[in-house]
Structure formats: C-alpha cells, structure tokens
Amino acid sequence: MKSTEKYILSLVLVFFATISIYGQLINEQIFPFEGETAFGDMIKTDDGNFLLSGTTENTLHLIKFSLAGELIWLKNYGWGETIEVSEIAISVEGDYIIGGLYQFHPMIFRVNADGDSVALNVLPNGDENVPWKISTITCLSNGNLVLSQQINPPSSPPYAHLTLCDGMGNNCLVIDNTDVRIEQVELINDTILLVAGNEFNWGDDRVLLRMVSTAGNRLQTHWFDSFLITGFDFSNMNSTYFSIFNVYNFDENIAKTNNEGQILWQIGHFSGQDCKTTDIKIHDTIVFTLGGVKINDTTRLYIAATDTNGQTKNIYYGEHYAFQQGEKIIIWDNQMIVAGQVATENSNSRDLFVNTYILDDLITSITEPVSNSGSILTAYPVPTDEIVYLKIPKEIAIGGTHLQILDYAGNIVFTSDLNGNQSIERMIDVSTWPPGVYIAVVFSNGGARGKCKFVVAGR
Image (tube, rainbow, N blue to C red; front, side, top):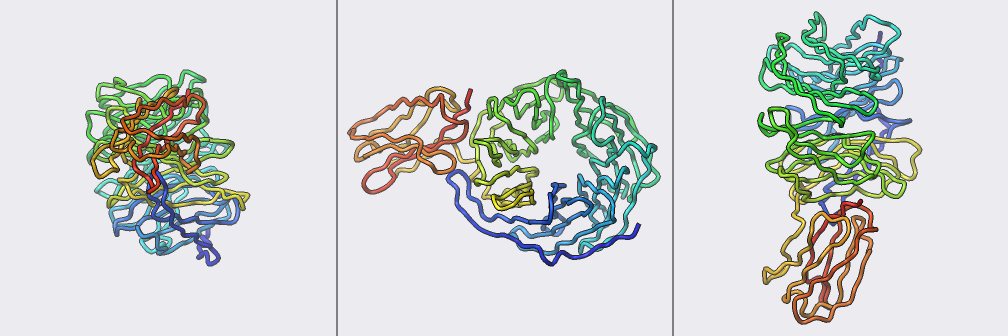
C-alpha cells in the first residue's frame, strides 16, 4: 500500500464575518473539495491550533488552522481504497492518530505535527466480507491506545469491542465486548474508561453507560431506555449529560442522569421537527448542544444553550444555506469553534465548514437589560408553545411608538403600534409560529428603547 500524499493547491477558502442577533459569528471558513465530503473529527492540538478531518470518496483530508482562522497546512492522503475516518487523537509523542475504515478493515493512520505521514496500519478484522471500523481512540500516558472497533454499518444487534493496543494498533488485547454501537469513550484516569453506546431494538432502543478498567474489569453498568445518543459530557462524576438523537421521537435532545443511573431530567427544543443532535459540551453551568434542524425544507445549524437545571437559555440558528449541520464543538478562550458540513446554493455537494463564535453571546439570557434606567422588557413564559406575554415597563413604554418581533433570520414576524404612557402587558398568540428564538424590540423615533428574547418551543 503506497501513500499518494499530496498538497491540495486548488482549495478555495471562504472567509467572511457577520453579526447575528443571537450570537456573534467572528468568522466562517468553508473548505470546498471535489465531490461529497464527509465530516470526520476536529480537535484542539497541543500547540494551541486545531485539526479538522474529512473524507471524499477514497481521499482523506487533514486541515490545520489557528484560532484566528488562519490556514497552517492542508494535506490530502489517498491509497486508492474507500476510506472513512472517525476520531482524531494525540499520541504522547505529539503525533496525530486518525482512526477509521480502510476498505473493509479498521485503520490507524499517524502523521506528525506538520502533517507528514508516519505510518498507516490496516488491522485484520477476521471476516473479509464484513466491514469493521475504529470509531474511538483513547491515548494512555504509557503510549498505548484503547480502540473501539465495531461492524460498520452497525448490524442488528451491532457488535463492538474495546481493545488495548500499542501505539500503532498492534498487539491488541480485547478488554470488553458489547452488543452496542459505541459512540464515545472518555478517560476518567489512566486506568478507568467511561463508555457510552446505543443498542438498537426497533423502537425499544436503549443506551449503555459503562465504566470499565483497562485491565478488562466492568466497574459499573447502567442502561437507559427509549432513546439513542450521539455523545455525552460531564462536569464531574456525579452527573452525565447525553446528547440525544431519537429516530422515533424528535422531541428530546438532552438528558441528565446521576451516577446511580437515574434520569434526572430530559428535555427537547424542537417539538416534532426533523432534527439531529450531534455533540454536547458543558461550560460552567451551561450545557451546549449542537446539530441541525429542518426548517422550511432546509437543514439549519443550531446551537442550544441550556442550564444544568434543564432551562433553555438561548437557541442560535446558522445562516441560510441549502444544508448546514454542526458536528463538533470545541470551547476555548471564551470562544466556541464549531465544525460540520455545509452545502451552499451554488454547490451540488456538501463541504466542510468551521465557524467561530463569541461564547458569551451564545449564552445570552432570554431577558436582558437595555435601558439606562435599568428597566427591562420581559417575556414569559419561556419557553412557550401557545401564548407569550410581553411586559413593557413605563420607562420603556413612554415615547415608544411601535413594537416589533423578529425571527432568528431577522425577518419581522409581528408589529404593533404603541402610544402608552404607562406600563403595558401585551399578549401575543405564537401557537402557529415555527420553533426558535425570537427578539421583541420596542422602538421610538430615536431608535430602539428596549428588547428581549423569548423561545417558541412549538407543539
């Protein structure tokens, strides 16, 4: 197998900045390739930069860029066979390890910090007619790897196992077998792993959360019924947050559990809509979920902010593309870096994108003070699916000429005249409005006097 590594010289990088009502988008980068590009992974590297991966047919793309969006290097690797990639990890030596599938076999590919090929290892799978894939890679401090290898696509039931291997994926020892599709593995300490996966049972789906040692001992096992996950995160070992994708019920996209396996709460932002939640990250007391939601025949990127008590704080929607779905979140230096797939109106295929946001703007409270007097325009209940009440205090109402409500794209969806000289409470029927975040603004002849956000959850 001879690598045909080469640089892509014809890549066009699209950079532009825009300010959204609900979150400040610092910059956006679109990486167009020839053909349909599948997202792989994105990580923060040891030198403070970022590495993005994807595949187009039988070609692996690796893109290294800075927090400011500057391209450091972009390389393309091909071996003449079908390639899929999943997770990227960093070895103790500082190499980047990419796991995935090479034709029908699990694959480990290592490059150095400059993107130069170190080694490609195609592992045996025991059955030439069944494709196996490495879906997660966990690096240990001694240089060994823990790999999750599984049938790709998942069979019914799926079969996967965790293996302890050397740094190139050789000399593997199975430490756990399971009949679930492993979605994520996190290292608790150098000998304890937290493993999460999905069991597909044609409507009786359930989730496995298991703590296992690198010596192969099962320490804890919990099952959660009636949903599927795409990942998890935890602020401490007392609670775990799942990002949910339920193919039978689109209402739920976050669940919180305790360390005894009990579900504490389970909520959703998109009632009955075609959506997919792909990643979840906790920052302080905010749980961020990421994905794509179908609105008016297009799939829109969304970032939802929910507090650890299950209350919605904000929902941000991406730009108007033919398709855009976020796949991975990284939070760093008060910024959120989001990567995923996008298809522009002029493109017949999906490309990779990276967006950078000011983190605080994505956590903005539903109600915020905007007047010098400290008085605020408020909306309740939040979220709502039928009626929203707007309370306009006297300090804002005096001199106010009209009220406008805008949707997430900045379109005016409601307007009403005002001529009050005292506090006003306005009741508005939103039962037919699409789910999402809206902003109410009171205007005077001198401009905006007050504003607030509210969430329509939909039915």
